Length: 179
Length: 415
Image (cartoon, rainbow over all chains, first blue to last red; front, side, top):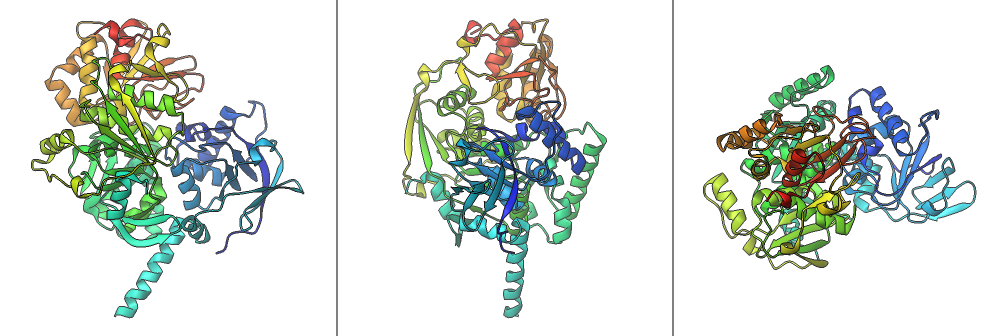
């Protein structure tokens, strides 16, 4: 499964060192996707949305600063972003466990160091993962850092479980030949 | 090459496959806890594959320990059913916090490579191994294959020298280091500590390695020495010595030195573990809850130091003090030494070993406006309860001094 050609969404802009407790408060740990999604709304209110604001998480693309997703490894923070319809995550740098979780669950992470200076909340963003570009609106382009081949392969497999299935099928074929 | 001892450990565990900058490695031990495993049970059912080596897996029920809601009770039930079906042989229910149980049992040894489903898995690096945290799906991959993929990190060597003052603990050392580096100051790095003359005890080393992740580090380890050997001898009986001597001399990206003899007690201001300042700069702030416990600050020496201050004293009448040993083993030792009696006499509530109060899961959730002194590892906004509560991180000495006075207090006033 190749990476999507383009992904479009609205910018949700965050600062530096946003941790997973900020993003998805621990009290929302749950296997229930409704409860999980409520956690993202609570996180948005904690971070930068007003109490009264009507929040629509569908189609958001996060633009964060440095060290995004630091803190707890709870995978529910990424699962909740996916359940809430978030389409992609851009940051100047990522905390390592959070980055791995985004890749493992196939929510596209992109490292970009320049967009933070100009992006405004709600801007329409288009991600071009193959070309390593991000576009704001119709004409402002930003470069993203190349993704490591290992993570690229996991994303192409639809996530780490897909990658594992692929490895297992190769192994069983090889094993079959041996017999 | 600037990959340190960590790079050597990765090289020794490599299975020959590489993709980009990532190397596939064999894993010696895996740690997984209740909430992380609960997320994986359906995936395991769909995959229908066995666990690669059930004897190398430590499963702990420590987050929902015991569970406080019906949903969590059901998750614990599912986790225990999974453990039985998968044939896991090291499943510990309510026996302590995973990071403590991981180093209490055999199997985590110098030169080893271990992963766990929790960011604080870095704790085990105190024994001189590569220990790093992963999220659930990465752990599933390891549970099925016995492998994981790692990028050898740039290593930073931290030399610790000078005699440790009586008022300073491992927690003060790591808060100082994090305050200096900032949150994410060691992003993706290995932090390798060399204890030249400080003779830092194992409980303090575990607290230091526990919190390297707050600086963004991939792992933290103490270069094995006679303190490591003594710990292992006590734990395992016989010790294989010289494991680490066979490795080539590591090279580093950067070297830092801390003379601990000059260090003062430290405290991290809300809402970041990297907001460390000397306690003397924060004295006088009123506190109404104090927590002594967690995988950072609930070990034997932590309870011993807290008891030293609380002996014959009473907790201030505006403060609620909660103490929680990091494991049942520590709990028993602290009872035998009389520390639990001292804490109870001082007015502390003793909680069972669990992750509850540190992760905002249960027991001791903070209300808006509450101010908490905690020996745990994170004071992020909203982690311990209402986002309008404030948490300061400190050593058990500083926590106990604050509990007595009702305000942030320099523990040197009591020593």
